[in-house]
Image 1: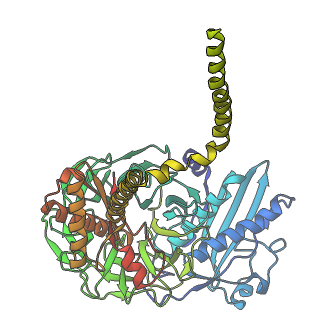
Image 2: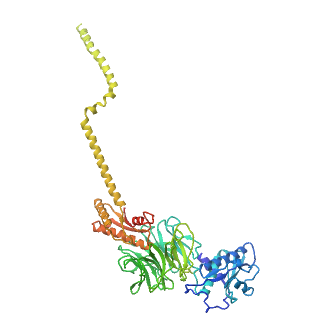
Image 3: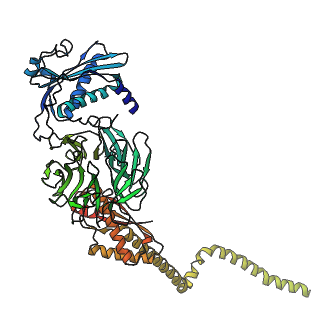
Length: 437
Length: 183
């Protein structure tokens, strides 16, 4: 699969560079919590050499582009019913388009495309326009086997989002999560948009707390498969696994950024402390040193600090420890039960869940411990937040529709929606980094 | 002559006797079923006493067995309760742990795994740690009562194995527990 991906990338060709790369104009400001959704039109693509197999592709690829870009929450995808456009008769290039037709229906951005299928080889050219300026922002042509159309769609969407926000987006990311669909808690994986679900573990035990290594090649998790709860490290491409052997429970492993090392809670003498381990499960050193529960480590993106949950102040609260100096400060002071910290990829915020009146809700607090902001309200239990690799969104689990499932929202709490529908309960989503092909 | 008289006399004596014994034997065979109850009515005291003693012994054995089973059941089934978000041993838990220590002293070959459990409220990882502390609290209490650490293993299941799936205080209270499993 990975080799395949590399091969396709080699086939990617640049149709044309952005005509006037608008570096100074930021279409989408991700720091704005009151982001206005930009109206975007994605008409059906044009079948360049209309055949029975090519024409349906023209529609389905345009649909995939719409759905993927819609997932970001940055766009208002316009209904095709209002368009004054016939993809098969009108052109798809800047010279052929009548931009007044697009501003009339309210679109500010427009994506046109052409699809050609010849003996199993698919060529797709796609263009992004600013309709008010009548200008071409981005144009790309991709060629690959027809089975790799989703890779092309993903690549184009990444380019679009990179151009509009200055960041690469999340289209090359995935989720790991826990599902009880088989009757046991097992680890699963899916693409960033909830598609392509596959089961990773088959341990028929209690397997939970997945976490991605920062190169996306390994998952760490815990399982009771061998008796007590142990940390497992799983190589995703080979499926090879090994477990850490220590006395007592092993809880909630967290990969260090850019190192083959993880932090995990061990209780060698009946008292839980956070330890630093090699990716092979060998002891490096003890990190925390405080009687009582210390659990759920999450790394700062520079790998220099850990945030974690500790009961040292009487109730579960989030603390931050500097690894080199060992100095510790308390981050959360509001409420009696703050757990599940997850450090944002920019490093400026920590998302966590807080329990109040028996209900769990997602909060985000800045790294100085100021301004806890609540993101979920009155919709069952909402827990286990995990940041998207670009910091634009947060995934979490919620019981708002009954059984727990995985949801996503923007980093500001808007656009909350369900990621996928599976049998059983889904918990502990972990958003992967963008995984380099 | 004398010999004949002697024989005749013998016949007179023997024949009726033979007849009598034949009829007697016949009679005995016929009455055999009726005569069997006779011994019990004839010797009631000793046998009755013996049966009563056997019954008592049997009852005593059953009682002892039931008591042992009950003690074992109580040991296995009586869980150590905890307050929410706490691994402290409450007074009620102390009584139960004292009984457990007594049982373990009475059964010196017994080794146990103490499982720590939580109610469903709160979050998974924290509850996994909390469950472990509950099991460790119970273990430490028993060690202070003289039970050797080698007989006391611990494991935490956090909130993974509730006894009662209900979502109310009664169910949660039942689920917050240290549970003894005989190895």
